[in-house]
Every structure is written in C-alpha cells, then in structure tokens.
Image 1 (cartoon, one colour):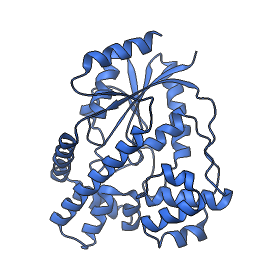
Image 2 (tube, one colour):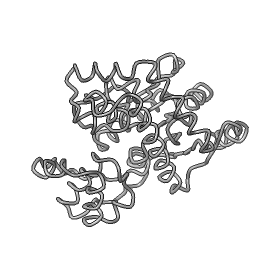
Image 3 (tube, rainbow, N blue to C red):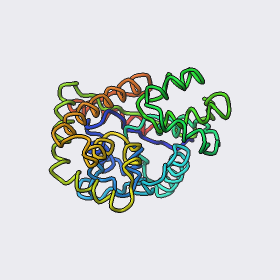
Image 4 (cartoon, helix red, strand yellow):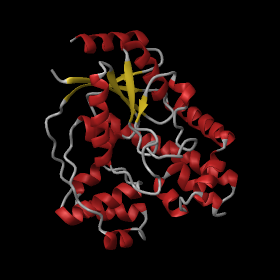
Length: 296
C-alpha cells in the first residue's frame, strides 16, 4: 500500500496553517511546510511563518533549514520533503503538507523529474538585467509549455527555467509513478474576505516588526539584491530601506502585490481537479472526507 499523505493548499492568508494544526491534532499528524520562502532562516515576520505558540505542540518540518543568501531549489525541497515523509511514517503518524507554493507541492506529490542542470553564471548575469516581463517572453520563445505553468512575475523561477531550457532545449515535464496516496484539500474563501485578511495580516506584520526584521537581515549580510529576488515583502522592504519609496507607499504597493500573488495562486490550484475544496463552514463534510480517506 502507498503511504497516505494529506496536502492542504490555498491562497495566502486563507487559514492553511490553522487548519493543518487542527487536523494534525485530530488524526495524529505532523506538518511539512510547503512554502518557498519559509524554508529560509530569519525570514519570519515577513513570510508570516507560523509561531511556536500557533504550532500547538505539533511538530513542523522544513521551516528554517536554508541560508537566505543562497537559493534553495525545488529539487532540494523535494529531496528533503521525501525524507520527512518517510520519517513521519515510521513514527506511525500522518504527513500533512501545508503551503501555497504549488510547484513545490507538484514536484513532490506528482513526482516530477527535475533536471540536474548546473547554474550558468554567464547566462544568469545577462538575465539579471531583465525585468520579469522580459524574462517571461524569453521563456515563452524557448519553452512555451513551461511558460504556461510558471509564475510570470517570479524572476528566480523564470531565470532557472530559461537556464534549463537553454541547456536542454526545454524543461522536462517527465513524471515517475507517484509513491503516495494523496488527499489534497484546498481552502476556499470569498475574494472580499481574503482581501481583508491580507490587509489585516500585513498591518499586523508591520506592527510586529517586519521592517526591523529586514534591517537586521541586511546587517547580517542579506543584500538588497537578494531581498528583491526573495520577492513580495522583502522586495518592497528592500525598496523602502534603500529610500526608493516611503513607508505608506511601500504598504500600499505591497498589499496590491500580495493580492496579485493570491490571484495567481488561485489560478494555479484551480487547474488541479484532484483538489477537494473546503471552507470555514464545511467542517462536517471535511471530517467525513478525512475519515473515508484514512479508512480506505
């Protein structure tokens, strides 16, 4: 029998972390983060990383495992997540993958074969001068199939995809047999509610010291260039700390950018017909779905 794995996905600020903790307590699970920025040490307030108090004694994995000065690849994530699934299973617990980074999740549960293409420094130097829109058009010409599935605003992923396409001619979409029996649950809340959640959470992060966190990260050697590569909060914090915009402008632009990101997440997950969508008022249906999955 394949190992049972539960995945909880959805847009930013939709309540994934809270649901995963509640579920882990109910079924005896441990949580594996599936967030491309929460893996980095020190990126806490800006990424909305779950606190020890919020974890409620439930073990969480793949948080704070990488140096933010260096890129942590999806191939590395897949390797580490598979290890954690095996470890959790040996403890007779249920692995619960929680996060909004769709490509990371797909690489893991769809068992995508990721090409071992080393970094091309000369190519990257040239690509670093391009905007995200320019990079997207370059990828579209080189590999239209990958362009249809990538986040067109993520410069780091666009650069890597172009690098692979430059080396191999395209980004291989090959998949092996999925080693897991996966139940994927998606949290769905109305747009207006999500917008309010995003704004409320952003203002709370500012209050908790998000700006101070960015200042400390920079003092510890995280360059403004690398902050921009990390995207969203850290991109706009870098612009603010470099005095390219004021605080109010930063907050306004960041709120819009987070909302745009949430819309892209929605588009990504909408394509996956395996996802069973749930919401705050569907606890009975969710419990029944969980029971059927675990007992089959």
